[in-house]
Amino acid sequence: MGAGKNPLLGSDAGASDMLRDLARQSLPDLLSEGVYITDPLGTILEVNEPILAITGYARDEVVGRHPSIFHSGVHDQTFYAMLWLELAKRGTWSGVVWNRRKSGEVYKQQLRIQALRSPETGEVAGYQAAALDLTALCADRPRDAAGTPIAHDRSSFMADLRALLLSNPDAHAAICIVDIDRFTEINALHGEAIADRLLAEIAVRLRRCLREYDAVTRLSGDEFAFFLSRMDDISQVSLAVRRVHDALQKPYEIDGQVIDLTMCIGSAVYPYDRGSASALMRAAAHALVAAKAGGRGQVRQYLAPAAAEDLPGARIGAQVEEGLRQGQMRLHYQPKVDMATGEVVGMEALLRWQHPERGLIAPDEFLKRVRSQRILMDIGEWALSAALGQVDAWRRRHGSLVRISVNLIAEQVSTAGFARRLARIADRYAAVPLSCLEIEVVDGGALNDFADARTEMCACRDMGVSFSIDDLGALTADIDVLDGLPVGILKIDRFFVEGLCANPTDREIVEKAIALGARLGRKVIAEGVETEEIGTALLEMGIRHAQGFAVARPMPPEDIFAWMETYTPPASWRAAVFAPARAEV
Image (cartoon, rainbow, N blue to C red; front, side):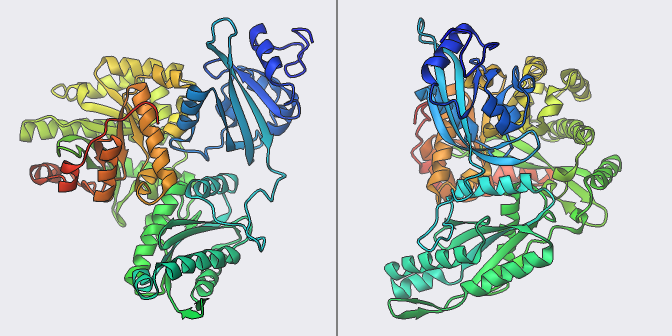
């Protein structure tokens, strides 16, 4: 086979001869799979026909682009960071991913990636990815002996939920959390063996209440979660949840013992409770709390404030923009601390909308529905000014400077002239050094084409500003690309932190994220530390800096210094054995 006649790449391959030769040696069995080859930074150099058929793109639409053109947004947080860490360590990675076709369809794909190394130097010369479309394999979900789809692990469950929301943005769906009433009493009365079998029976019964395109997972000892997809309207959702609830509360017979029990269910309904999959889970958790407060065997649906009623994005955007003009936006502040010492290392500024009729509204209930980047950037600039102004006010009143972090969308940081606009804002507060400002980049995936972002971020860094990124999984470039950005802090998402002590998968993800930070020489902070137990576990894993309800809830600026004067970390945190993070896990 001549160098220019590789059936994988074609005679007009744009990849280097070396990459073509390396690909030819390793890919003779992959001609039926979709294949693309990239340079070391992830730029696509060449593709074969099957990958074009799978994705729906033409060759000239993908060559020269980053593989993020295929990404669906399903895999958030540390997924891609873990992928690249594994690839850097072992030279190969294989797994199932959710990608998006040019048409917008989100689909499941088996993906294998391997490094292509120069035979002369042994250095990585590029990467080859081989993809198999799993759409036709509708039976790929594991099933029990009766043919019923079995439970997902938590990460797969969340990935499927994200895919559902992305691929069916206008369809109704419900996320529900089930909690068994009095389970500790049942466990004490019947023994652990019977209680374990009871949980298994509940899982089987729950699975059989659902259709094959719904999903269920076990969250903890006595909590399950499930989602209902492809629902026609909200009334159908309510009936389905009630049907599941009734089925789960029928008596169970185990070893001749009849066990009667009740359960509470909290639910959140999409698109009425718009937001990310994690936000919907939190909404369902709020509804569960309300259900349990009402007594045993209750069902509650999350009700967002009326200001977040189902309105088109443009209308919500106009209302938010008017609220910004009318001075209705507020910043509350959540402390970040060194858990081992109690030292306050910073404050995160969190947006609130002081609606004249609805009261204080959290951002999850309105901000994600604003479609206009211009409005989001206007809010970002307002937040920068308000946060720096608050630091100046604290300085004048209390005589000390507080480090503050502000959330901005990646597109704002990447916009030409951002650093100049920030400098103009900072000029209003000349007594506040920009070393007090940290910018948290939201949706770091938009930094994949990072040349413009790097230019602006480096200019800001030169003024003293630091950067953090709170969605490692969305930043899908090579580790060297991430290393090239002036990002000093990596945040572990609250979803995985909250499940750290109850879910082995979440713990593994947190460990990988910590290892990535150590490998890159970056500080790592955990958000969503809701319990003392989680904080202790993080300290033992090598994380000192954290924020979450176990430290403090977000509070108005006038309460911050009173809190700082009285805060003491839990004794278990002060006594925890801190294990510095290692680059390899």
